[in-house]
Amino acid sequence: MKLFLNLFAIIFLPTSVFAAPIRPLLGLGLGFGGDSVVKAYYQNGTESEIKAGDGVSFYGGAVTRLWQQSEHLIDLQATLGYKFKSTKAATNGEFSFSKVPVDILGLYRHKQYKFRGGVGITYHLGNKFSGTGVVSNYTADVDNALGFVLQGDYLLGFLENMAIGLRFESIKYTFKAPSFPAQDLKGDNIGFYFQYVFGSDEASS
View 1 (cartoon, helix red, strand yellow):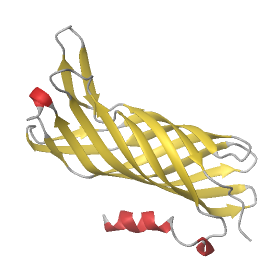
View 2 (view 1 turned 90 degrees about the vertical axis):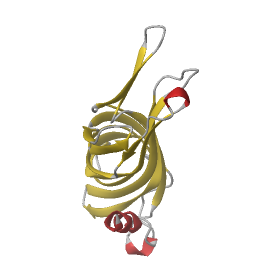
View 3 (view 1 turned 135 degrees about the vertical axis):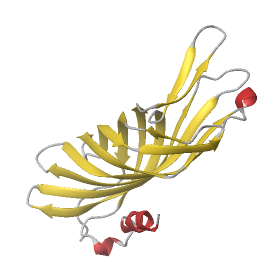
View 4 (view 1 turned 30 degrees about the vertical axis):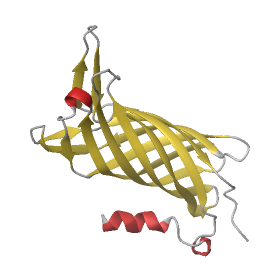
């Protein structure tokens, strides 16, 4: 845990450490995939499932230019987010699975092109599976989890402040008692995201 806090702190060092400014960002994502965590069945014959990698995510953080050589650029990005998935709402209760991802990514691009590619790590904290209503007794303790991220995006806008991208995440969660037998569930997922970065990446004088 200390390692990830130290890595996350790098992005918030004073701007004098890096030639480029530190730029805040906000993002929204949607992920699909992983092992089945729970499946709910309804009286009308429909069903709703939560997979370990499913969920809508919201995140914020910062990015800075880590290295530049001629037309080649590498950015360092750190974010803290919240990812959530629930079964379809019912009058007598529902299930949900939430997590707090911390991401550290290195992103490469060639200055002539608007495509970026990157790799990094993700560490999921506060993982929580729970139920409400008649299923409120169904809960599970879920360990913090370390994963790997591979992503690519396309930059938009005059200042290239916006990005739409595709992301692959490989991670495994360990579910424990009380309501579930101890087991490891894969949370591998593919997702889409939209991100907005504030300010310009031009080096400060």
